[in-house]
Each structure stands twice: as structure tokens, then as C-alpha cells.
Image 1 (cartoon, rainbow, N blue to C red):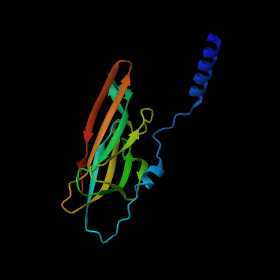
Image 2 (cartoon, one colour):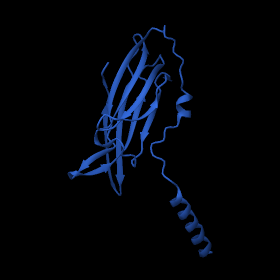
Image 3 (cartoon, rainbow, N blue to C red):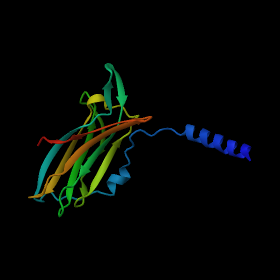
Image 4 (spheres, helix red, strand yellow):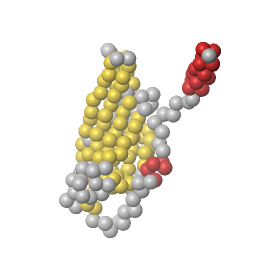
Length: 169
């Protein structure tokens, strides 16, 4: 009986080790489900926001970094109106475009939130990565809220902090 348990454990261990880790996947199917058709004549107000994200932070010196999981939280703060996020672009420390999460309008229903996750092993952004979000909202609607939540846990220690977007247009 112990031999069977040991064999099952070894098979699970081997199968688990053979999986390749997917780094910050961009599942377009999720974004396409949220596609919004905006008419150019719509009387929506345009905005653009900058959000700092940290996929790494310095630890002990400038020569050692610590990897983080980062979440960009996209929130509709309106209780009554849907809002539209037009683009979500991710840049590295040097301002180089890493990836486009989407570059077509998606909607967020009233009080709805969606997220973009940067996996802990995805260090392409470095210590100064950031997002640019372009959005449209109905007149007199509250602006969207973009937050960054960075975290990491190793053993019994945990680290987490937040950042908030700044409107740039």
C-alpha cells in the first residue's frame, strides 16, 4: 500500500515538474468578451492615465532585486454608467513597449473591476515598469480608478504595497 502511494506521489511530482510556466499570458478571449462598439459621434469624454507597476524591487543593494507579482486593477467607480477602456499598454523601465493587453474598446459595467496580472517570474518590466490606459466615460461620470498591487511571499515573510494612477490627459 505504501508503495502505491509512493508511486502516485512520484508520478504527480514528475508531471508537475514538466509543465512549462506561462509568463503573464494575454488571453485575448477574455478581452474580446468585453468588446464595446463605440460610435465616433458618442459624446464621451476622453482620458489617459499612467500607472506605475513594479515587477521587481531592489533588495539590500542596487545589485540585488526581488521579484514581485503585480496586479493592475481597472475599476469603474460609477454606480450608474458603464465606462470604456480603449487601450492597456505595458512598458518596461526604459520606456520600451513590452506588450499590448488590448487596443480596442472594452466596457466595464457600473462598479465592475477587472485585472491584469504580471506573474512573479515575468521580470521584463524591471523596477520601473508602467501602464498607459486610455479611456472614455459619459459626461458627468466619475473617472475610472487604476491601482497597482504588488506582492510577494517567501516562506513566512510577505511584502505588499500599492500604487495609484495619475491622469495625464
